[in-house]
Image (tube, rainbow, N blue to C red):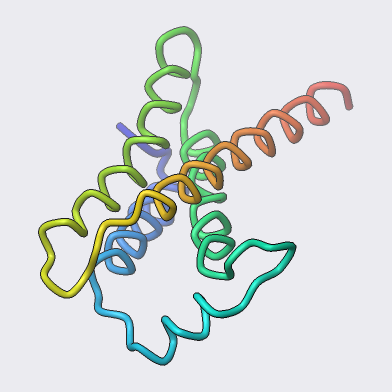
Length: 127
């Protein structure tokens, strides 16, 4: 079982929304707004990619009963596999396009999510 019962629906819904966002066409106007604006010299669309994938490790981690041993490695692999798969999927969709920078931003969001998991776990263990 991938998720615990309470987070099961949330986890599948979240991954489904990620998939939907990866395959639905984006209008040119929205795309131009995201690509033409920068914060700290980073395009908004890359920031959005990172922020969208940041909750994935949290949902995967807190949705499991235990992650001892190889369970943790499977969660880390799964949390990186999903954004890479969804970006590669865009290669075969005619109206979407693969972008290595999007994939890097997706994975950066996952890494930030795992850092947040570690911080929250450490603070929970120390209290």
